[in-house]
Amino acid sequence: MAKQQQPISPLKNFFAGGFGGVCLVFAGHPLDTIKVRLQTQPKPKPGESLLYAGTIDCFKKTLAKEGVKGLYRGMAAPIIGVTPMFAVCFFGFGLGKKLQQKTPDDILTYPQLFAAGMLSGIFTTAIMAPGERIKCLLQIQASTGEVKYAGPMDCVKQLYREAGIRGVYKGTALTLMRDVPASGMYFMSYEWLKNLLTPAGKSPSELSIPSVLFAGGMAGIFNWAVAIPPDVLKSRFQTAPEGKYPNGFRDVLRELIREEGITSLYKGFNAVMLRAFPANAACFLGFELAMKFLNWLAPNL
Image (cartoon, rainbow, N blue to C red):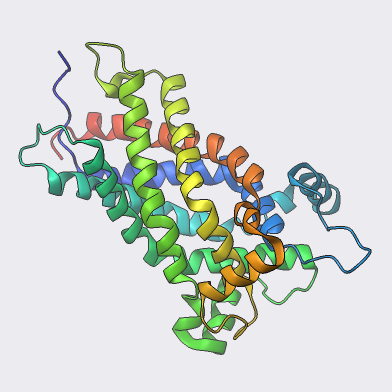
């Protein structure tokens, strides 16, 4: 007989999710930098080879040229953005679950968990789209050597000056296309793996740390398996010069497939998957520990 589950509290989800987000950035940012550099590296001129041969090569060159600091380039924007973003993400998931429960004891089905996860993806896009645009622009300027932006705030100011709020929010539709199905997959697979790893008669909230790390890491991998193609298109679109793709993502997709074939939609796959496991394992562990602390601190909230 499974134990009585703790009532869902979107507010606790909010604070615990924020802490999980900080854990995620520290664990995952170096590989995120490499992912964006691989996804946006320029096409070599005839007779020249690619700037980076792959994930390891990009890692080595970044370390050699810029030191460890280079791997954490542009981290201020994600830390400032990711903490509220994951807070909102987990809040959205908590709210999505709560809205579907008829009573606080209702156990949700996997499609219901997927729907709750999709709601969280809608919630996060408002914060995510401008944050991602700034992060991508700062990460690629470091690798091209042209310094246009002094930092995140300068980047926002320049984008706003050039094209108003639209410039800051460029790529929002692609961010939605990436995050809504991917968030559904993320949370559903995490809950599924938690249930799978819970011994009979125990509650998923009593899972061991290695089990939480495994479920969180795998959820990250499931999430990115869905998210990579729209993410590649989004990185391209958000870092392109103004007016290059008048029809939005359709133009980006056409150009990518014409020039580099369908496999280009999975560019940066190794870097993403290498990052997804530790980053999301750290995120969910941070979330679960913060949740335990909050349940102890304010059991009736």
